[in-house]
Length: 269
Image 1 (cartoon, one colour):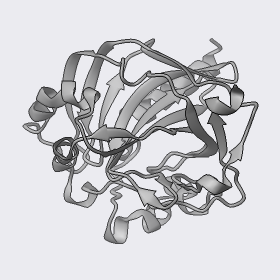
Image 2 (cartoon, rainbow, N blue to C red):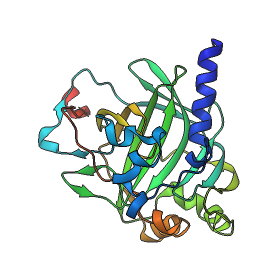
Image 3 (cartoon, rainbow, N blue to C red):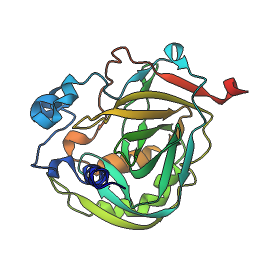
Image 4 (cartoon, helix red, strand yellow):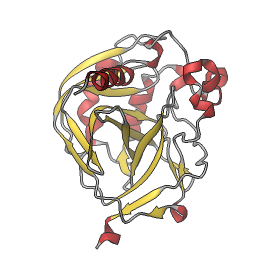
């Protein structure tokens, strides 16, 4: 790998693996009041794209307006059960992975899994409906480009991934996390079988990260099947967050002429 690209990836991993507040200085942002989403762009120059960008996320997916794209391919993902670190960043709970844990293939290009994290309620909406929660699996290619897979959840049976993390989340609750601090709990093995289940339908569009600095040109894939999560699991995730982050869901952003494309296995047959 050329040195400049290697440095780019190293910086990207640093960005996604550490709190945004530790990049240069502590810059508080939240989901309410004077530091809420409509103010993010004015909090600091490095957050300006949150206000000026034209490809922002999340978005509302209107089923009657999505465009079926026959060129889209089945979603190819390879995830291995692996060690991870459970992190409370104050504004979200997530899992940080090491190298070589998973790969997402889009148009023959490989994106490596870096981390996953939860939002509640969901950030993306379907026909204006906001679901109970949303899981983001963040991937990066060797050239630094980003791709995120989003899984929406409705209230129902417990989610298998969070079920196996229950004890670790309880341990995380004992750790101090305030301001620019974060809490870490190492996990010996996270089984990813439920994450990589086959996907017969998904939505695809180009957007951004949903938290500052709201970096654009992110390839988004939102799975069509809404999975289930228990109310207890959502409570356990949000209970650990700081007061201004209990509902860590950014409002939907304008499409500004963007198209949302649909892959549907039924149309392929």
